[in-house]
Image 1 (cartoon, rainbow over the protein chains, first blue to last red):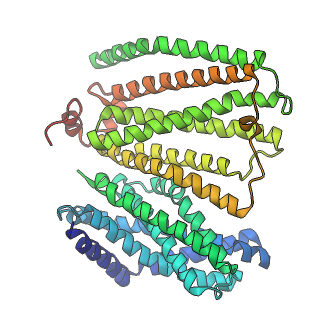
Image 2: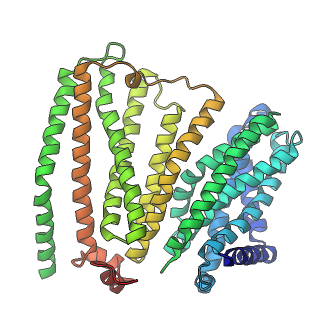
Image 3: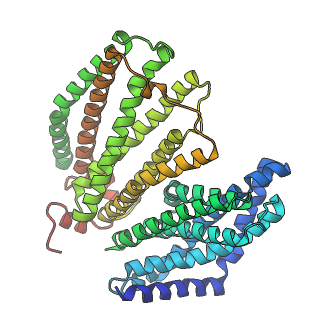
Length: 224
Length: 257
């Protein structure tokens, strides 16, 4: 039990250090999210009120799609040279590895959501200045939920050597997180902090449930 | 050559075993069709379109039953590593996906007749569509290449997660919709009092679907077990070439861990 926090922080620190040096998320995932935002703009047309109305949803959608790419990369680096096998040599470490991967993904995704959120505020007129702290918390709770599921099923892409399985698994599974995050964001920007806090607590409950689930079953995905 | 003869003899044995149940299911389905199409009166308000209910409700019921079976077999696969549980789980998931698809397609037809729209963003519709996708994901995980034992266990994890997700999806969609605007669409066929002949038709149809589902799951899981066990078809052999020794070692009884 006591090994879990140590493994978690070691794995998270390793993943973040890799990103800091390789800048994969910054150089490829972030531009992907921005491209998607522009594409949504083309799809909806330059109608300002419509864009402002849909901005919260578009922000979270682009974050989700970018996240799928991020999870895939996060595990592909592990499969090179059998790195994952090396990680798992630590006894009873599977849960810690999972939490570490999820924490590193959440930190990167949080930065991504905050950055794209500022861009959405600029491009689509999303009023982010009403409750900035609340929005940052919603962003954090949302990315934890995405990471909890993505870090669990990202593993399947490496083990199966086929990426196609990931989106079809992850997107229906994250839909509750997506719904709660979008609703919380919408409530916060439309000046209804009470409702935003309600959705935020729903989101926090999903996060806790998915993290617990991932922690419990991760070892089953890895073994043998 | 001898192997393939053995295989066909094996399957013939399985076929014969499923015949009484198949006949019973077919007979029940025939009675249900007669009751639903001829005996039961058309609905006072919805007319003939209401007869879709005799397929809609049983297919939804069968789908939920099948997904329940997937949950149980997923847990069983994780705990015991049973090949049998995994085969039953896959067969049940296939049945559930097909039945959910039928429920959606045929609910859509009913919606077109009753609401004038093929699709409405009603919570129940959305969560059913998500349920459909969840189990399509389970089947995708089941179809991943690799060592059969590992694929089984991974798919079982997906099955267990899908089970946890079902209520979460249901409630999140419900809240999403109810906070958006109050639900405007009701399902009168489920809340209104129902004529006796309609109720009998519905119950017989439920029985027919359940028997048919049971027949499919038994037959399909037997076929899956047959093709994955010792007598392998050439295709299964190619897919499982990675670790045949492990598969054989774990197949009949589980050795001491």
